[in-house]
Image (cartoon, rainbow, N blue to C red):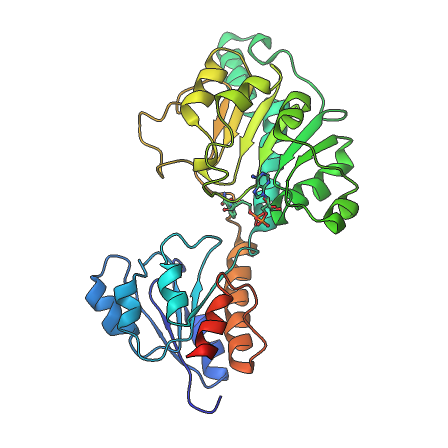
Length: 335
Ligand SMILES: NC(=O)c1ccc[n+]([C@@H]2O[C@H](COP(=O)([O-])OP(=O)(O)OC[C@H]3O[C@@H](n4cnc5c(N)ncnc54)[C@H](O)[C@@H]3O)[C@@H](O)[C@H]2O)c1
């Protein structure tokens, strides 16, 4: 590629992109960055018109925006999802979309594990016992009894891809047993984990934790619903760090309130942040975290490095690393 490449960033969550600008300068690549999250479609078009590569965070990437581009070949979505990008329209124009699904897999797996331990050792609820006991001048452990040890419990992993696989890898040293439900798990992955997969009913009936790590799709929406919850053990907890749409939250609230299951730990919601009438907001035995599983200082540096790596691979022709629409390459060749 002999012409000078232009990389344009539509919006970003970092304080600044000085590091990226320096990396691009080293490579002789033109670099511009904007904050267009609330800008009009027209302004987005004007700013990004001459890019070879567009890096996007939250800006809506619509068909009209792409129609305004003169030469873009690659869009990189800064993040693990790409709901804000019209993939079909990109594919039709032969533009590849890459995303970065692997920048925070360790963080999400660790969050799921942290939530499981918080449930089984009643960490959050213990704080209230401590404060109440302090006010009273004597211990009262009644609100957090009974408690159990993790060792010997069964963890049901729904979706054993990058994150579910890491949950398995990190947790197996704690003496837990596993049930895995993943109809698409390859023979090699099963051999790697030493597991056979089971169906949802077997997993729910046999697990002390059900932890969800599937992508959200028409197939998986409300995978956790009144029926699946009715299969779970009364001492079991549901942990969801994947996507809010995976769980029917009204049914989950009902199951927790009625004591059908022991509780839940949830990081992801239908509306974000959840509205004040979200049915799990004020329930005892439910731990809520603010869709933060992805975050660590390490994952933030990791995503920046992976985006630069993707740009390098585009320039030297060895990419795309993780394309959403590899068929766009074919569409490009055919035109
Ligand atoms: N909370 C956060 O901050 C955060 C951050 C990153 C990713 N995530 C979410 O975590 C989830 C998992 O991400 P990943 O990188 O591990 O994805 P992945 O694609 O590597 O793995 C997903 C696994 O789910 C399996 N699967 C698909 N349909 C299934 C079904 N019907 N039943 C059971 N298994 C099924 C797939 O075969 C695959 O093995 C995604 O929903 C992602 O959006 C959340």
